[in-house]
Amino acid sequence: MKKLKLVSAFLLCFGYGFAQDPQFTQFYAAPLYHNPAFTGGGYAPRVIFNYRNQWPSLNANFITSAVSVDHYIDKLNSGIGVTFLNDSQGSNRLKNTEINLLYAYQLKLDETNFLRMGIQGGYSLRGFDGSGLTFGDQYTDQGYQGGTSIDPFLNKYATSFQFFDYSAGALFYNPKIFLGVSMHHISKPGLTFSNPATPSIDCKDGDCVPRKLMVNGGLNIPLRNPFSGAGNFDKEFVATPAFLFKQQGKFSQLDLGAYVTYTPLTLGLWYRGIPLKKVGTTRNNHDAIAALVGFRFENFSVGYSYDVTISSLGVSSGGSHEISLSYQLEKFESEKNPYKRRKKKELACPKF
Image 1 (cartoon, rainbow, N blue to C red):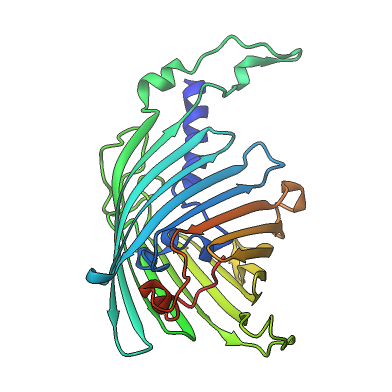
Image 2 (spheres, one colour; image 1 turned 120 degrees about the horizontal axis):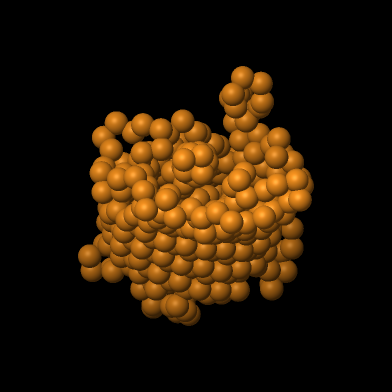
């Protein structure tokens, strides 16, 4: 019984983290993950890969990888896509695998302003591996002795559960600005190991995935090209201050920073946290400072970022490493190519 209580307490503690979605520092390099309205935003077949290793110096680190594929259908003014996500927490104790189908419709408001509306439906499989857990009755003054099992727990609780999920979003943009909003987990799917088939209407602690609201926006500010030679006249030189606000259940977060792009190089600096909001009663809500470097070579983009932890967890956590790769299949070689003409009015978000 003592053993069962310990495992239940473990699940309760991890349940809060398991109910929260993974995050990416390079959120504009994972556009479909954050808002289905971005689907088809490359106006050509596109493949994106994202990888994040958070707190690698701890045994309870978080590893998240995601792959997205999307395409724009010109005749339908629509984008279609699919995303795959795998997330492991606590040395693979908790795992989450997701697959989502996405659709977005683009509405032309005038020559320069566009509105996109997107929906997403998906399937999620979440599981718990308790085979490596140890308990107090396995230790003596001589150290670890073994001799116990969590079979009673495994017989009482499910070790995995699955559910369907739904999200929606909207995005307004023109060549200068972009502003988007999305709502994830609209149905608040059930999240419990004792009765995984039961959905929750009133989300109580640990029994469902709470809805997640995300608001993002930014502004493109053209800068004067410091090199005016013939080989540099067509290079993009722009600063892009941007933000991402997230709220899920009791938790909220703000990413605030800017990119500076001088093709093919992009540099960025970000702060994550809400300084005026307290965590508990004493600690300020500071999370991380992140630095980014990215390169774009025609159809191929790569980005690397590192988060320096400034919360009470400290730099000893190892921060977070993140890599993004993107490849856009269509080559914009000619003004006669419809993709080339469309690219001039594509989303104003950073492209790496």
